[in-house]
Amino acid sequence: GRLKSFWPKGPDSSTLLRLILCLGVAMMQRLAFVCGAIGVSIAAVVQAEQTLCLEDSSQLFQNLAVVSESPQEQKPLTKKVLDSVQTELKPSSTFINVIKDMQRRWRDHKAHQLEELQPWKAKEERKARAEKAKHRGDRPKPKPTAAEPKPKRVKDLTEEEKKALEQEARIAKFGDTMSLIVREPSGREFNVKFRTNTRLQVLMHSVCKKLGVSVEGTKFQHRDRELDALATPTSFGLVDQDVVEVSSPELQAQAEQKADRVTQGGQEMAAKLREKEHQKDRQEAANQKRLEKRLRIAKRRAVVEADEKRKHELKLKDAVTLHFEHLQGGKPVSVNLAVKRNNWLQGTMDLVCKRMNLDPVKTRFYYGKLGKKVLVRPHDSVRELGLQESETIAVTVGAAPM
Image (cartoon, rainbow, N blue to C red; front, side, top):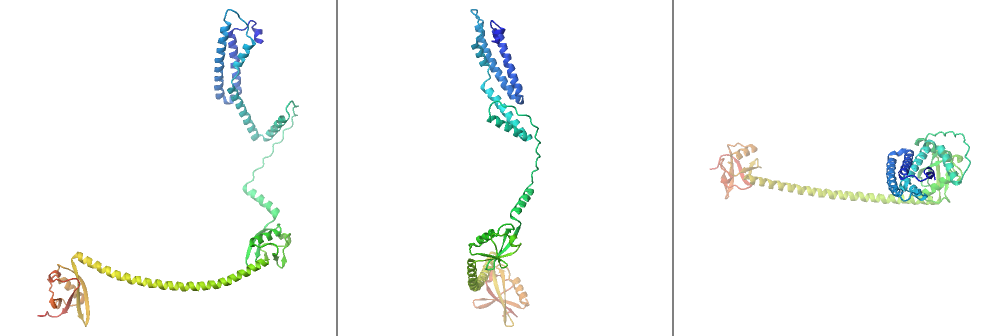
């Protein structure tokens, strides 16, 4: 209607196009100003929307220009055309959803800041929103009230302070901790921790459960006084480290059975210990015999191995072992020496004389050959004389026989 009042004959297409473009740009700029917190993303969206609107408007008014430029008739724009233009210029649903999402995020951010910085004010706003949701419609505005004083922030307690407060509350309710000594009929004692303001029936049930007996028929005494189940240690007169004696037929029977087991077990244990000692002695004697036998076998094996080793070494060196014997004061004296087969026997003879403390000039050496004694000369060798391993050489002192 306003367009018709300005242009009775109807605006031309170029004027209408400029007007619509100006209105679209103004609207987009206003939206971009409102959402300036995230300007980069909004600017991109606005630019895209403007481009789409410009393309749609250009296409629309090209059609309008073709119609209006026709010389046949020039009719004013109808309401249908204006409605179609308004529909084409309406922002897309994607753009509207983006704007609504940004507004929601901004409201959530402000509410979070209000909860952290001004919790009392946030509480009032929550109440107002609840009332508004409950009663929809117009309501008189509430009268402004004075601002409530900001509550003082209580300092958080440390872990040690919390434990101290809990301990004080526990002591105030159950009393201080105390230790009582419970004595069985067998004489065994054990400690029980208790509270001074707790009834003694709790102690009775706990001890009976520990001992595995029933509460009925069990007596608890302290210095010839039977404990009262409904009394407390303070009212009954119990103090720390007091002795409470427990007695019942079940405990008495258990004590007697234990004593019998101890007596019988002691006798059996003594018999087992004696048998174990005898068995240990027999085992040690058998081990000693086996050890002695092993030592004898090891010694014989060592002698045999040493002799074999010596013979092997002599064989490698091409030598033999000669047995020299001499009678001194009616007692035989012997010396064993290894001699190479090709060496002269002079050095060996001098060594034998030195070991037997004999004069080399007067000492003579003989070996047996075909039942006869043959004199060994200094320049003879084992190979020349044909001496064998462990050959016996007789040593005498005196002139050589003729």
